[in-house]
Image (cartoon, rainbow, N blue to C red; front, side, top):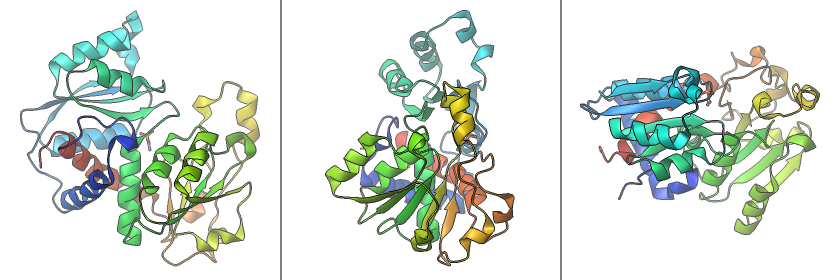
Length: 303
Ligand code: CP
């Protein structure tokens, strides 16, 4: 049976992940398939987005569906004080599926409890970004040919970066992952994720600087310091440029290694990396469209 919602990456099983990889490859071969004909999808973005919103809306269009919604909640009745509960109750009367991004952690789960239709979490605060994780996995599968035995370096804001939280959980169901965390103490991977890895007997290593062992990486996953999650602007100023990946740092890395980044980047990857064949982040964003077609099809039981 297909899952009803995608709120946390752990709502999907390993079989679901593998099915999404299969479907994404099918959509990459043929992106235009009329599977959503006659269906309407709500795209509710309470927080800014470029890739997630536009790739979802392109995916829906390529599947033959129609889109309603907002990219700025100030243009909706939220600005008059309407609650998330009431907005979701209303919208779910109109549509067949809701895609939602919201700054509050737990908001997507709450919406799924209120909605009469499936809900896909397009990012809730610093908590989860499961559709990003599935496109990251598709990118890893395409470039490495496997999801088992991946040595991945997660770099930057591991505290507030929701994409690394979801990715850690997803890769943990595959064989023998090795996680290397590179973060300053202020932005270290939260203890609950490290406890989870400990409970699964999964190896991880923590560093505060880029180290020579990036030569062992299959994937270097860079992240932006999440300015919008800091309550103290001075704290952000202290860490905003903590790591900048430059082309000359990649000399001893594996020929097959790829650099991923959920984007947007600020300056954590120097533009001199962009022309290096190991830079994969723009293709990764394209993979998002195929993966989101796959996620919608899977949740709606269209394939
Ligand atoms: N990766 C990602 O979520 O990008 P946007 O914020 O532009 O959607």
